[in-house]
Every structure is written in C-alpha cells, then in structure tokens.
Length: 141
Image 1 (cartoon, one colour):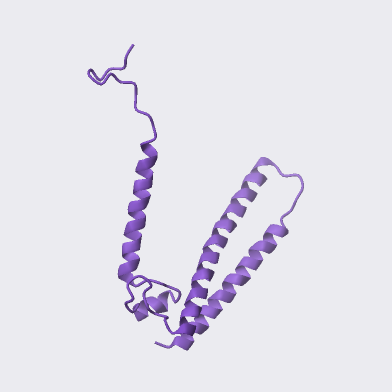
Image 2 (image 1 turned 90 degrees about the vertical axis):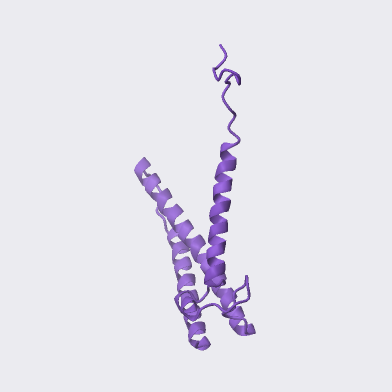
C-alpha cells in the first residue's frame, strides 16, 4: 500500500471539502433579500436545509480525513479502531478515511439499526392505552 499516495488523496479531498464549505457559506451571504412570495420562501428554506445537511456531512468527512492524516503521521493508519485488525487495502483505497474494518463496520451498522428500532418502539410506549374495561374489552359508557 502506497501511504504517500493515500496521503495525497486525503489532502486533495480535504481541500475540495474546504472549498465546497467556503462556497456554501458565500452562497448564504449572497442570498437575495427583499420581497418574496410564499413559494420563494419555501424554496429558499429547502435550499438552505439541503446545503446545511451537505455541509454537516462534509464536516464529518473532513473530521475523518484529519484523523486519517494523524494516523499516517503516527504510523497507525490502516488499523481498525475497534478490533485492531488491519483494514483491507481495497477498503482503504475506496474510502481512505475509513476507521473500521469491514466486520466491525457491519457490526456497528447492526447496532445502530437495533438502537434506532428500540428508540422507535420506546416512542410508541409513551402513548397511553385506551380506556377499555380490562374484563370485557369494551369502552366504559
């Protein structure tokens, strides 16, 4: 594995993200102001929300890239943070800032999925039951 090539790819991606974030910030500052109808307001809000979500994803990727660059510096690049096993070379080539091996990544996804389902179920348990008569199953009159 060519660490220097990966380092260059990480730096290139980092620069792209920083440029994109700067462009998004400039678009926010340059938005027109004045009289807008309801459709313009909705469109503007949706655009702003989309840019915000993209920016959040870009910020997360930027954070992951910075971690990967630090790992290259200290010699721990390519090692799974969860189990300590080497991360596959093809995986690192596809996503150079990846932090987990494929097995640990899949386990994390299963846990997130299970956690999200548990959260959803917990939400429904706060809804009070109906006022049914427990013996007859009928609603009292």
